[in-house]
Amino acid sequence: MRKYLVLFLGFFVWLSVAQAQGNAYVAKAVEYSNAGRNKEALQQIDMALQDPSLQRDAYAWYVKGFVLKELYKSDQAQSRFSSYRKESVAAFKKSLMFDTSKQNEANIKSALKYFAVTYYNDALQRTVEMTTETESEPIELFSEFESLFDGSPDQLKVFQKEFFVKMAEGHYSLWVKNSESIHHFQTCLSYYNQVLKLDPSSCEANLNLAIVNYNQGVYMIRKLGSQSDMFEIISIQEESVKKFKLAYPYADTAFSSCNPTAASYKTLMFIERAMGHDEQYLKLKTEFEKRQKHGEF
Amino acid sequence: MIQANFLYQFAVNSNWPAEVKKGNFNIVIVGNENVFKHVQEKYALKPVGAQTIKVMSWTEYKPGTFAQIVFVDKSKKTEIAKILKDVKGKNTLVVTNWEGALQTGSAVNFKTVDNSVRYELNENAWTEKKIVPGNKILQWRVQ
Image (cartoon, rainbow over all chains, first blue to last red; front, side, top):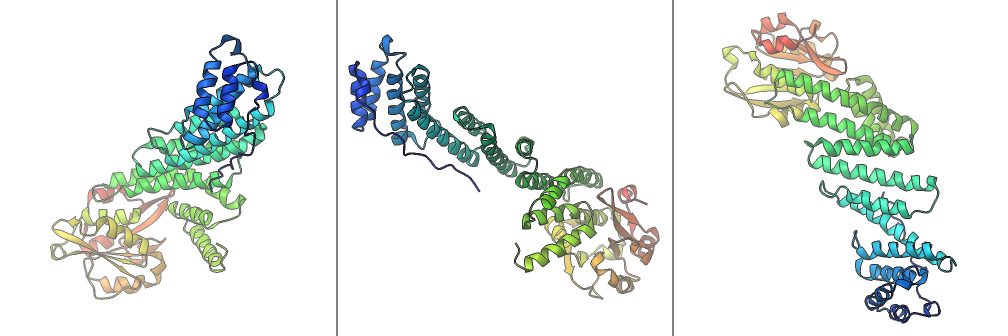
């Protein structure tokens, strides 16, 4: 289940004309922006910022950040690599840096929080859409989220875990489309292992590591056919057994440490069967069918 | 899946008596739908010499139908005596997958060795059936 964050839109919507006193371009930019004419507002604030005396002006940068944010919302909210968003974040950060009075700090932090959420959601969405050529894009988007995140390290871990799971799923899908390429398979494993580093008891990561390793073993055997000779059958089987052995502890943890699900039953069952543990396989199968009959799954 | 692959290897790497080298090359699977599905999917209609493989899945053994290979799953081990009696004198290779099956008279028995599927042979049964195992079959058997 993808956990997109709900966008927090209810923060400041109006620029203060009073703060713009002293520079005509800034005042005009505020006026245009408050009238919803943000492209013209952007031209005005860019002209204002050409004035060397304004280059360290917190309010001018704040106005620029605000105008770009509005442009992002109206024109580029669907664009993963929006230039408005990037420039808005940069402008807000400059404003924070120069804002000794802290007058707009709360508003800027709200705006940055808003952008953090958009980056996070885009990163997750990109994991679903990614291809071999674009596999770094979700990482870049997630890095932007991390750089804007202002919660505790423990809170960040929750987001990292979710993101790593989605990256693992994305790479798994790409591996299934082209099982000859080991890159996506290995990257998938690497992301699930990163999840386990953050949360060793993660049911999802344990179960999926079991499934991914098991499936790789099965794919190897499926390649066998009438062109294969006896030696190939023996050697490929040995390689696949190594994968089943790798899968087993993860399946066992997912089964014994988490609430058993149909998926965790089936995964452990099939791994037992693949390893020739017929008694354990039949025991689990009987138990699974009984529980299934009672509507537990 | 591995058992299905081995069944095909037994078919193509054995020397069969001339009288069964005509018509289809029949493989009967008794009591194991998974093995049937894999043989069917991978090997149905593949050639064994000049013959074409035909695969049949039986939940119960049907006496009287000739097959070059009959695979009997352990879930049907109680039927082995009846099956062996039916194929007596025929050039049928009986393949099983449970401990002690060779002693009952099957020619090949699958066993698990280090989590892998391997097979053991009953050479007397092969001789009796006038089927000659090829070198590849002999080379990879386990004792």
